[in-house]
Length: 478
Image (tube, rainbow, N blue to C red; front, side, top):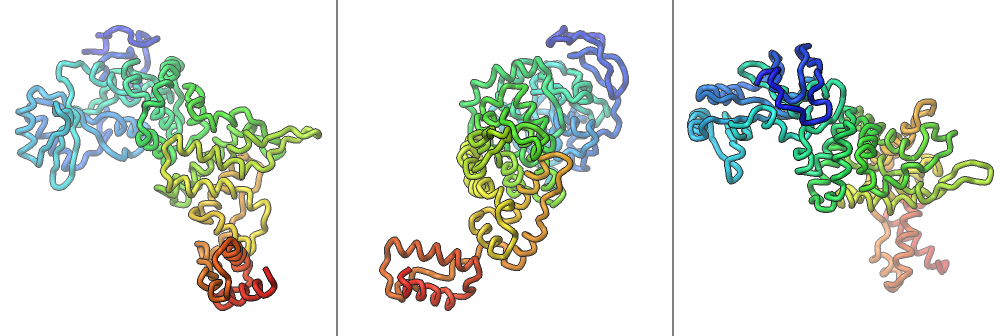
């Protein structure tokens, strides 16, 4: 199908002429637009072997989706996906068997797996009777409905995805393609957070209609999207704006609760808690990138920054002197933070580290960084680390906009290095108390807890000192 063979408007504005940013020609939406894009994607020698094998039987293997999108954005793709519409599956399989191991997945061979010299590639198989618009119209957004042929080195763009990509617009291909999996909306939120994209108004309306399907989504798939958001997003204001535009903010009531919660402008000129939350999460992402914090550690820091102030929804009050305060919001924020993290499917390993950070994120305003303060804080934070806490606190301070001094963590870090990076093991144990003649009971636990405070305060630093301290406490009737 040529550019002039428009299959008819699928979306509002489908017949509008658009300027292709790749070739500069005018084109309509939903036409088989192809234009030269030499060297767009650098394929490995193993992948090129498969391309040639496919070509030998008269088929065309194209690179699809994210790899094409990322290269048009000037970024290196993290993985490469292939698609093929074979004229004969048997002939294709024979050609591929000549170059490597071939396997299939799916009852109808929707996916062919080819291994060449130890490298594995997946080839999505589609109906050869479908034209380009129908083939790529199965994808969620136009900017993902892009393909590139390594043989002709042509960009294949039937949905004007390159135009939307240049404009930063998340536009659906078809209503059915977006509706078939409601999680695609959350994927769009991730694209917003990663690239600064925004939802097209028509697409946002469809996304709003899919909110009721949220409850049916498996928790592991929901968490997979939020985890990727935590690990890749840098533009959190755009991500939260996307949640707003699609109406999906209502699915996360703990976040929605702080949407319009005001803050004292002298401390938070950025505005509401919602605005601060977005900026703090963005600051956390920047901290992680600059310090090489990745994987589960990044999940803790970014999500910790995202939820650290949820307690302000409950604690914010307007004082008689017109000041806005939120006393006790750190402790109050633990419950909504836990509820939110469970809602998005975060595992216990993440929740157990985020929640003590939420509870303690104001500790730097209360305690001066002394050895005792660091020891006590590390014990309260466990299993989170002091470095987790420092990163979130730094993001909290950084989320207030320009004009504020960054959090000075040097003294905290120095003392942590001197005292050890993890809470010290209790020196006083139950067996010591039994040896001192104390029978097991409530006083047992009280003394152990008191001993930990004394230990952290430096009253004693070895087992003998702990026993002597306990003996003195018992002698005094403590």
